[in-house]
Each structure stands twice: as structure tokens, then as C-alpha cells.
Image (tube, rainbow, N blue to C red; front, side):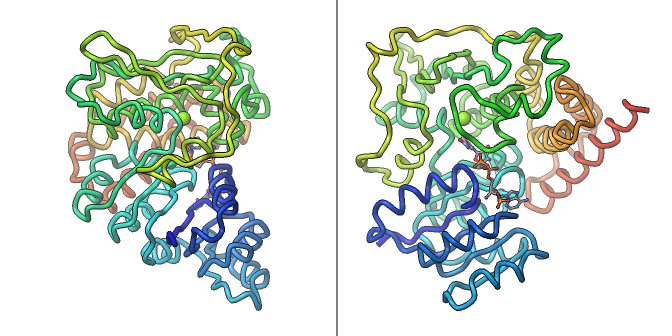
Length: 390
Ligand code: NDP
Ligand code: MG
């Protein structure tokens, strides 16, 4: 029996993970499940999977969770400390699928106790890549990618020497506004941005796909995870979302990972690694697909993408500042306080203001320091937005 915990269990990745676990209930012992506001889903899954503990991130929702779990034998907990405690419960495999920087701490705790961490929460590597990798190294824990592009890279690199890699290309669907003009994008609403042509994902990552902030995070995630140079990473718009990553080797050969747009592939690969097991995903019929198209992303319509290379050049805490400012700008866009294209302007301005502070950028990467920098960057981004409006 594999002891598993799922952080962000009520979200899109969490529910896909639960779908796989439910298909083989005898193979898994569920330790902890976490959620946020969706208490009904969290309680229903914790009960059905006979979890030891269910944790909501929100302390004010504890009594709701206790009511929903009363008489089931599942412990109910709430808040950030409870999340960290749940991540410290011995487990073999932990899914990190909370959205945003809030996912960092439970992942670090899980790595510290030696669990294999399946990392969907790309923000962990963007905000604190060095800390995450050092923590895994110190405890000997395994870190496995779940982001589809990074799972694809990982699979292509199996059996290869990273020194023979010339280029890593990750693909982008182009999101909701792939064929929109810059003028149309300037007027786009959160509702329009939250519709994805190919993938069914949470609201925040779907909007980040339309702006390509998601791809910017993934470029940085690629650098951190695979330890390659910024110049070796490339992005191609691929409207079909069937090729997830392409590796170019020094002998001129390319290796690509091709599969249907279903996150259960990457989740299942991480769940069964180092083995491959049968998964309930669609088998592609390439004759039916007919064409696979690739284009260079338009830098004018996707300004967020360029910022990834700025962040990688600055290094240190720049990723943390970038992600925090992005989360604040995204909140403001969802609340109709700023426009779609303003998000990149706000993030760039925040990064410019803070990157001249060398003591901040080069600070030692501890969890406390990352959390302080995250708070500072959020406050700066809010200030940038207030002064822009005023
Ligand atoms: P969702 O928005 O669908 O789910 C997010 C999960 O995190 C939910 O369980 C939510 O709880 C919980 N949550 C929200 N805010 C907090 C908080 N402050 N503290 C603790 N928990 C919180 O997101 P996705 O599943 O789409 O994405 C999860 C992560 O995986 C993200 O980092 C994303 O970038 C990454 N990812 C997602 C992919 C996808 O296909 N969805 C693909 C690749 C990566 P509740 O809903 O109960 O409030
Ligand atoms: Mg991805």
C-alpha cells in the first residue's frame, strides 16, 4: 500500500489525482487531503477515501468541516500550521496541487520528511527553486514534475545525459486569445480569459494561459528543475496542445513527447514512476489529427513571456517577486480593477522597482525570507496599481 497525501485535493489537479486513486483503492492508503473553500468536496472525498485527516486552508471554515466530517472518523483541521503538520505525516507520495505561493510550505515539509513530491505547484520552483531542490537533496527525497510540459521533458530525458541537450522547447496553446488582436486583448474580461480552448484547468491558471504568464512561470520552472541555461529554453505556440515538449540534442536529433491534453497522464506518470502503468487517457489517432502546427509567440501580444528571461537573468529572489506581483495583478484583473494587458505592466514595474535592491535580491533563500519577500512584492505591486490609477 502506498501512503499518499494530496494538497489542493479539491482543485482541478487534485480531483484528477483522486480519480486515479479511486480506480485502484486497494493500492493506496490516504493520509491527508487539503482544500480551501470547497468544504463539501473536501469532506466527501476524505470520507470516501478514508483519509486520516482533512485540512481546510481557512481557519474560519473549521467548524463547517468538523460538522461535515462528524462521525466519520476523519480528523478535521484548519489553517497554515495544520497544513504543514499534515504534510509532516509520514507518506510515500505527496501531490502538491495548491494554487499559488501558498503551496510552497507544505511541499517543503513533505520533502523534508522524505516523501516523493509530485509537483504541480509550479510556483514553488519559481519562488524558491534553490530552496526546494536543496531540501530534496538534503533528505534524499524525490521530486517529480506534474506540469505537463515538465513531465514531458522528464520523460524525454530519461536515459539521456543532460550535457547532450542543446535546446528544450515547451509548447503553449496560446490560450483563449490566441487569435485576438492587441486591441481586443486590451479590452478582454476575466470571464473571456477563463475559457481555455484545449485544457480544463482551474480559473487562475486558465487566465495565466491567456496572458502567457503561465508559460513564463513554466520557462523559469524548466530552468530550475532541469538546471539548463536560459538561452537553451524556447517556447512555441502549438494550437493542438498534443506535443508538450521537444528536446534538441547535440547530434541534431529531436525527441518530443506527444499525448492527449489530459492531466491524468502527467499525474499518473508521477504516481507510478519509475514504472509505467495503464492510464484512462484518450489514445491519439494522429491520422485523424492530421496536422500539428507550431508558431513563434508574438512578443507584442504576450509581454509576460519576455519577463521570464528578465527574471532568470536577475536570479535570486526575482522569481519570488515576479510570482507575487503576478498573483496580485491577477487578483486585480479578476476583480475588474485593471485590464488584461495591465497585468504585465504591473509585474514589470514591480520587478524593476525591487530588482535594484541587491540585499533583497541576493538574500539567503530561507522559507522566512521567501515569505517576507513575497509580502513585500505584493505590497509593492498594490502600490504600483494605486499610483497608476491615481
Ligand atoms: P484550482 O484552482 O483548480 O485548485 C486549487 C486548489 O488549491 C484547491 O484545492 C483550492 O481549494 C486550494 N487553494 C486555493 N487557495 C489556497 C490557499 N490560499 N491555501 C491553500 N489552498 C488553497 O487549481 P489547479 O488544480 O488548476 O492548479 C493547482 C496547481 O497546479 C497550480 O499551481 C497550477 O499552476 C498547477 N497546474 C495545474 C494544471 C491544471 O491542469 N489544472 C496543469 C499544470 C499545473 P478550494 O478550491 O477548496 O478553495
Ligand atoms: Mg503546463
